[in-house]
Amino acid sequence: METVLDSIKSLPGVSCAFYYDPQIGIVSRKAGLTFTDENLANVGQILEKFFSWGIELFADLERILLNYDHSTVLVLKPSGSPYLVIIHEIGLDANLLNMTLTQALKNPGMDFSTSTTGSGAAAAAVGAPMRDGDANSKKLEKLLSSGPIAQILSALESSLNKVMGPMASFIFSDTRQTWIGSVDHISKASIDKLVQMLCSEIGDQEKANTFKELIAPHIASL
Amino acid sequence: MTTIHDFSKIVNIDGVKSYYLVKFDGTGIAFQGENADTIFPFVAFSGLNCDAISPLLGFSKFKHIIYTRKNREDVIAFSLSNYFLAVIKKADAPASDLVQSVSSFIQAIISENAANQSN
Image (cartoon, rainbow over all chains, first blue to last red; front, side, top):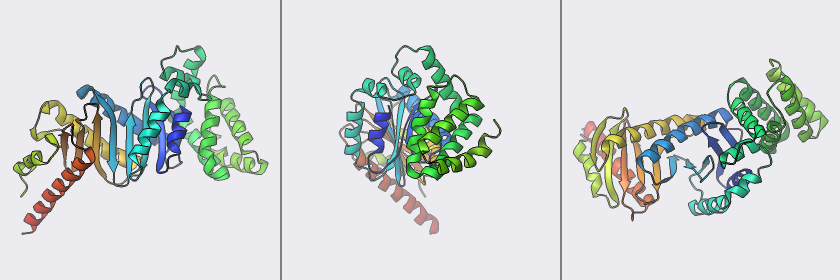
């Protein structure tokens, strides 16, 4: 899943790509900070309604393209996986995007298995039998996609961006997935664990301290 | 003044198989094609939600939405003030050409209407 998103996001003009599952919310994403998890989840929810109503009327529906003044939103439902949403500039070469999609989705099973973490959501998406750990990860993903925990995670990502710059969103996304696979439930201790993992990724003690100062007000209420 | 008759001329555009003109509340205004009762609310729902998505993503104006189908008879819906105009394209017509033609058609109607009002 991560591999597919990486391939798409690397295209010039693509500003965001994410997988959306109606039961889980955002399963995986590659996007800049301008796109919050909450907004993308809302967009995913609306687009899923488009798609499901559209397929009721037109059984052979393949994809949906929403065109705005400067941007386009593409929605498709690859076989056996969640909805894939791609946001890109009008100028993006449609043939290049199509070829990249075809190549990336050619072997979705392999793509899902190469996802480093978040195996619960990925396995569920390809219809694999769900293990206990997978079910737990799925439950956690749902919990993390909305409410106060989602706000805390958003604050963590935003603060990380301030100390790490452009690579922050990638590092946060990967660390978050690893963290989800390593915790049973959400608590102050589990959030502290995520903070420690992110500090390790920062690598620089001074920057890590700055990061902790930035996030302190957001996690104080836990 | 713009009339329903003006919109019905859309079927004269090359590549248009059928059309549906619907008010923002889902009320059908005019059509030529099949399943209008089910397509009217769907087109209004799509159009309204495209407008709703726009601020969530920091986008400006919604232009059109394309439902791509395997049989190539794509559904294309355009925003038109308080109305939405949807066309189903003929399978052999290029979608990009049809988008251009229908956009020009809509613009011509808007311009004509504005000119009539100023007279």
